[in-house]
Amino acid sequence: MKKKFPLAVCRILLTGVLVLGGAAVLSGCSGAQPAPESSFVLLDGSKKTTADLKGKVTLVNFWATSCVTCVAEMPKLIATHNKYKAKGFGTLAVAMSYDPPSYVVNFVQTRQLPFEVAIDNTGAAAKAWGDVQLTPTTFLVNKRGQIVKQFVGEPDFPALEQLIEKLLAES
Image (cartoon, rainbow, N blue to C red; front, side, top):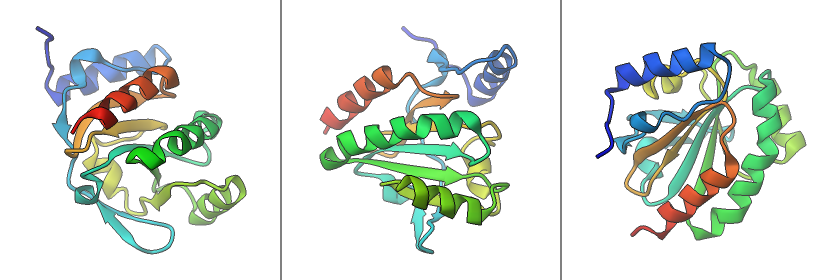
């Protein structure tokens, strides 16, 4: 039986891993927890809430235009999104509150991001999702609106795709 840790313990463990320098997926910390109630303001001015994520497998990626790793992983996020979007997969990229909106809009346009992009102007979404401060931080949410996995740093994309396929196959 796998041990599950409370969220507070996971944050402490994660901080220790990051201090040592690297991406982390903490196995005991990745139980299916409900995604926190929050709302996102998309670049077109519309709103999306956590409730809107239900029914799809969704990757929620907190990022910034000033984050080198975020920029480097973006082509892989695009490829993953395009590979699975017809099967009920969605991607929501959430720009951090300190990211100038004009930079985000320029990035989205020049890179032709095919998925939804939100700007977390107030920082409320990052706070709700576990006080996200490090980018990239990515959450994989199942069809029931539960967080299945959290990645800090660039995910292992082959492993991520295997998990996406497994979640898409669930009813």
